[in-house]
Image 1 (spheres, rainbow, N blue to C red):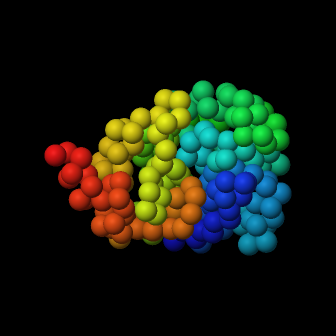
Image 2: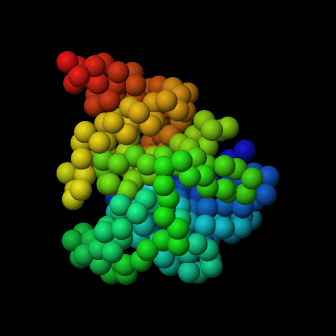
Image 3: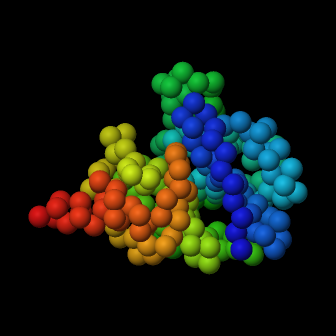
Length: 219
C-alpha cells in the first residue's frame, strides 16, 4: 500500500507530503514548498529511497524547494500540467511579491496530463487535471488506499482561491464536482494547507461545494 506523512513548511503552513510504496521503500515528495534539508532528512530517517518530486501546481509555496531537493537527491521533477508553465517561469517574481528568499525559475523534467499515471515503487497514482486555482493544477489519486493529494483545489470546509492570474471559479467548481466527487465519498484527501478530510464530508458540509450548495448555484 501507500504510506504517507505531511510536514507543514513555509510561512503558509503548506503540506509537503512524503508518499512511499510500503513494499519497495521507494518514495516521492509531493509539493516540497520549502525546507529541502528537513524533507531530505525525513525520507532518510524512514529508510526510504527518493525517486521523484511530484508537483500539483506552480505556486511558490508548493514548489519553492523542489529544484534544490531534486538536485540534491538526483531525482526528476514531475508535474504539474504545462498550463502552469508561466507560474514556474515567474518564480523569482513570486518570491519578491511574498518577500521570501530568491527562488530561481525552473521547469519540470516531465509535464503531466489528465489520464497519466505515476509510479511510486509498485503503487500507481492516477493523474487528474483540475484547473481553477491555477490552469495547470493536477491531483494525484491512489485508488487502493482511497487517498487523494489535491493541492489547493479543495480544503476541509473550503475551496482554493481563483482570483490569481488565469484562475477561474467556474472551472474550480467543475473540477471538484466532475473530477473529485466521482472518486468516492470514502476517499480521504490531503489538501495543500490544513487538515485532511474526506470527499463525503465535504459533499455534506462544505459551504462552497456541498451537494446542497451546488444545487443552489444551479438554480
